[in-house]
Image (cartoon, rainbow, N blue to C red; front, side, top):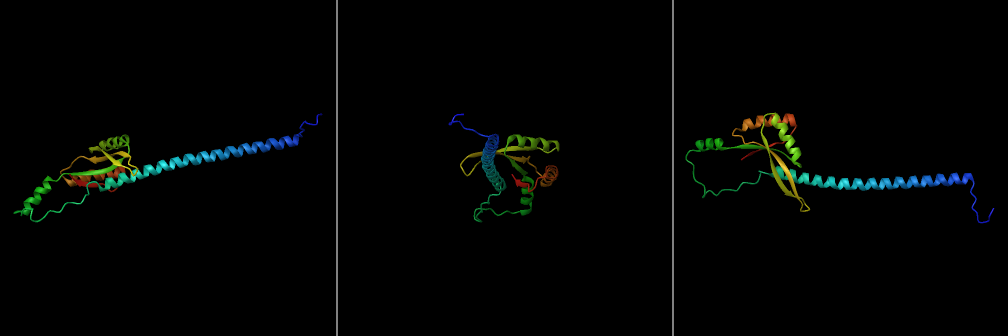
Length: 175
């Protein structure tokens, strides 16, 4: 035997290999947890961005068509001679439509249109654009019913849609 040789007993070798195995396992677990945390943070950021854009879309959707009306000065308006005939004429000329909801993708919007078409109700897709807080232009799709002359007919169709699609707070607008 040489003085410079390192002599390790079997017991020491097994302790050393067990220690290295535990050390490598600990490194793997720590790396895995750090990787998962990074992936979860990226997912959370993306989810918050989408959530924000959904809130923007919803606020735009809910405020669409509900802008305040301009007041008319009494000096500019004409005096009507027969108010009953003008009310009847206004009722006849009113056209109603309903804004169902907004979708983030055209594919989802088209799928909804196809499902509602099976019920016998015609709807169409309006493409909308809005800006996010970061200035990014977001494209979304609003689902709208066809124009109706009679508000009761529209309400009947909306009741069918609400039952089958479980929609709430559908807004009826006058076109």
